[in-house]
Image 1 (cartoon, helix red, strand yellow):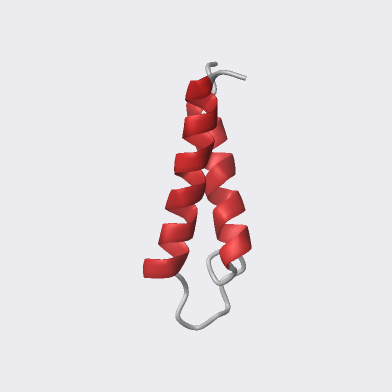
Image 2: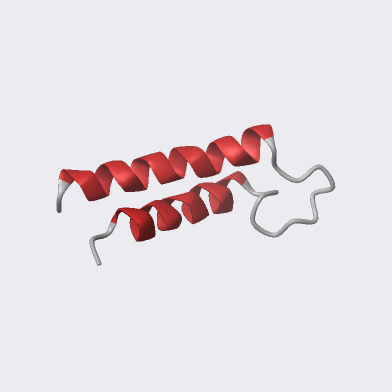
Length: 54
């Protein structure tokens, strides 16, 4: 597995968690951003998609 892909996934996961932590969903009704695990997973998937060579 290329190091670039691993770095992209880790940065995406960090960004997803950071978004949950600092922006998040104040009402708690947002399906993804209200849960830190889902926000981190969503960020990691986005990092994977952006870091993958097409």
